[in-house]
Length: 108
Image 1 (spheres, rainbow, N blue to C red):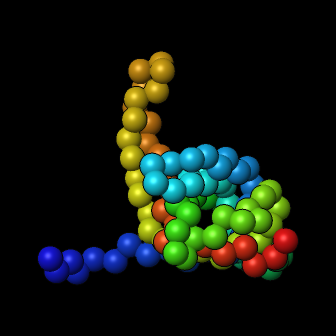
Image 2: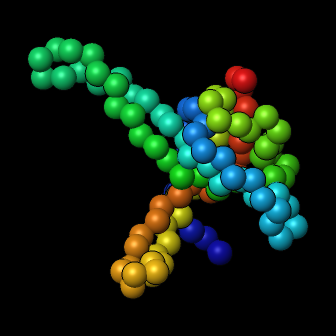
């Protein structure tokens, strides 16, 4: 197959909430990741734009879950995945997450 599309994400930031559980064949970590980006307001003030990302990581060759706890700095690469589901109250929801191909804790 020859695909001419790119779905690539690279993030570095601080881990928020973490849930690690056994998956099929490997350990799965679902966690939030905070990234911050400096911006300058129209008045010339320096501000920080904070963004929370949902991340899923499956422990493997390039995904290291050791030391993955709240507050640590991590670097990851991966792809975006968007899914739809129906909530308990019957409304349709959309959920976007980063599926990590590589993950490394860089600061504890």
